[in-house]
Image (cartoon, rainbow, N blue to C red; front, side):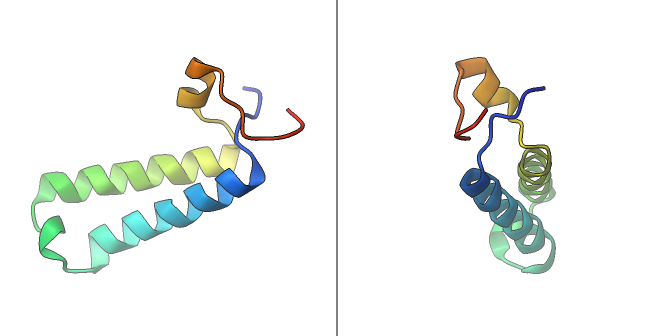
Length: 71
């Protein structure tokens, strides 16, 4: 897996992932009362965290997108 996610993209993905997981689990917002919406948000948040940590996004690879300068 060749890295295809740049530094700024990784920071944004990491922050969004943490925010989604924390909001869906701890916020008590009515949006996340339904378990399906809650677990979809947790799953998306975890995927964002994973792609941020490994600097590789399968979706980017599928479409030939790279946000890193030296990869």
